[in-house]
Length: 332
Image 1 (tube, helix red, strand yellow):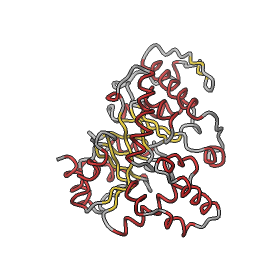
Image 2: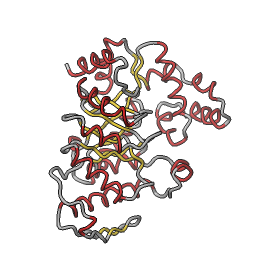
Image 3: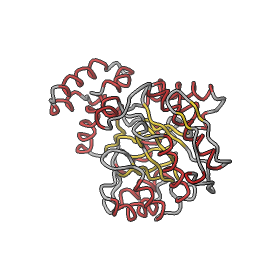
Image 4: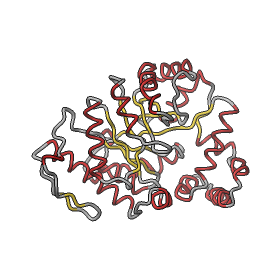
């Protein structure tokens, strides 16, 4: 099991020092996300200032971008990092795609599946003879003149991870992808009962096996009462989202999820965390003292996840000793 770091990249100027710190501590990968900032730009700087760690997006939102735009970005980052880049894509949810990105929301699993095929068709053309003839339901790519062809690179195989919660995207990942970003709003039971069986369905479609895909997730951990309450509040936010209701329903907590949705709709944020019981918290969060945390994480996720990232973003210089101790304990 690998242990990775995540960053929100508040300022691009901070990225070189952050990336060097992540590599020095011994993390296996550094992930950026698309929240308040672009996920790709920081990785260009990280590629320049590191030598060994993997660098990936967890995730970049797919549908506001064309397959060609994503393919170019990934191709350049793969070349710049000497083959260490991982392209992580996600669908986001309908309100954000339509109202935040002003893009089209349609058949998300099918469209993301086709986007992956289109991106790989472009990479194949650039590494090969330059010809492209991809015709799908959502994307059509038939033009690639030499002037716009970046040409072959030394490490043309770029792993693709996709993110999701429900069955269709799990199956797409199993069929086509090198990795799957499990949403942090999960439980071990949900992984066993829902995520892994649907990954296996996709693997079977493509005659692949479990070793052909890595499951990665950002996970909630708490080592004291303050952290427990912060996690409780974050879980209540995720649990209020209807798209994530199946996770709650797996444990028979569907009614609690509906109540949380109602509280969120009425902007009663203060009452939401109170709906997350200690039992719920224990299922969503690994709770352990700092010196036992690595063992507790590996015990919970052994056989379920291949790589983990703490939900708390990494910041250089802040609790560096704690991060180093955790990584060292995790790798022993």
